[in-house]
Length: 142
Ligand SMILES: [Mg+2]
Image: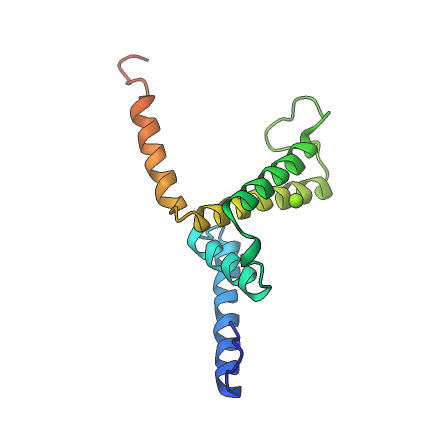
């Protein structure tokens, strides 16, 4: 990230580092393997570069996420039952769905970061807790 007061060489190095990070992110995205911490870092940079950190209070981020959940819900509204794979949705609808899912995820990641919660760790712990609470039937029971 470029910072005021950097020399020309420092700016070039920062630009190269950013381009390299972007390439790593692109490859990870292509492999379907973008990490939550990477998303969190990108969101932090995005907010910093625009001086939007002042607006990113937990309450504001939560409300923004809920608004995005509303936008996501609109895509399913009045469609009746939607079947797995969305075979009857056109490409534009599927692209829009991806965008709204991303909006919800990004606000969730940002909210977690601002609240000091390690979302990946919390989610992993919750899966383990759920497995204890709802044990899978043993093969002998089946
Ligand atoms: Mg949206």
